[in-house]
Image (tube, rainbow, N blue to C red; front, side, top):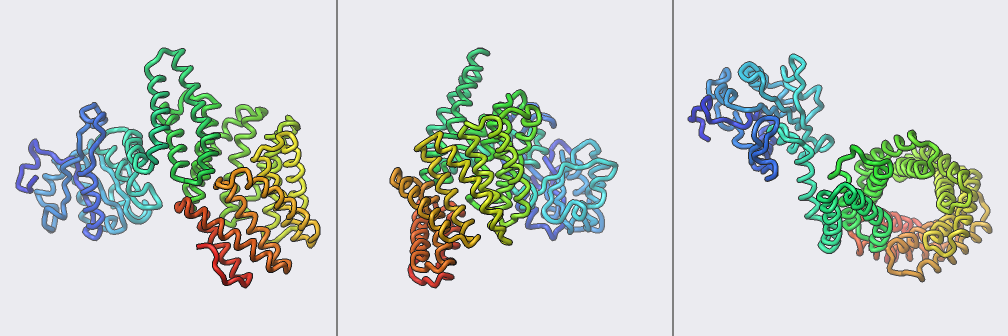
Length: 529
């Protein structure tokens, strides 16, 4: 549309973009993104909050590109404001101090008192970036925070499009998430899981009530399979992209149906999906996203436990939330912050054991929880007696669990891990002979585990960490040659793991840690790549 058109007539702008010329780069980008965005076909032509939903949000008027500066708002600017269905303010400290932006807000409000004003934050906090008059009269505008620490550009644009088109944000977010998922999902896993979940959801949608209930149970069984057997197998392959695809598809099942009316078991299963997603985010070192996933899961498990405080499954579910919220602090070196959730985790785990002392699952949880506090005690300042106490309790619980499950690989992993940490605890206490005993026990169990499946990435990861821990301890106690050999073995293992999944930042961090320890140990040969 040219400036010469009658902008006050039937020709209309979808929005008027107001901004400070110092933010011209942001304005050009936002202008292009908004006008280029195509709304989902299923929404186009339907009745929205602002009338019929358009296919595109265009045209959008951008004043400082199309009109010259003047002492006051020109008639053309006023006409453009009168012909605009909405006003979008690019908010920054620059626009907050701009008299032009303030005049455009005031003029739009006087000409179009019932039309929406949307704020797009590109810099600064709301208190310092909202222009004068934006929130006058108690009319708080819809704000999209385009900053990286806010909504981010992707979600921020979606918020603006939803506000301008009068559609539900969730519909746009869902469509955007589906597009992103298609780009990252492996073809084979995506085809298989897409066929299974689509088939289940299609049957649920078009069958009678009784059939729908049966299919819902089947779908949740599939989600349970994704969270257990399939996840374990994919972890063994060592690909974060495949795990992410499984998690997102499982979560999509609950998002499509909405959270209202979900049973307690379904809500708990959704919390487990969020926890799995957070665990995978941690492997990418995306701690902020991981913490958000863990906290959302914890809110759900807290509410479920409050409703049914003596239910072992609810206790167990919330125990997992306490662990992960604490572990993310522990992983970032905030051991003091990790202590309280770890202690709450132990309290919940011991409550499970008191309910059923013969349940290996509850015994394992108590072993894990005691082991966590052992790990904390070994952090500086080291509390060696406390570390030995908790590590002994962890080993006792883990042995009891393994006696009930026998040769299950997971129990073997738990037991060798307990020997490894008790070795460290005894070493810190100066009990070298006891430390060596547990080193031998750990080596024996590790050989058994690796012989069962040498290609398993999970097993290789465990073996790598064990070699590092033993090597570090041996060097500290003067067993230099064997210690360096253990570290070199760990370096080779982590190199192999990184080749298998280059996206895994956790393994990259281990690679750097091992390299550093080898150099400190005086070894200058070839280490991890």
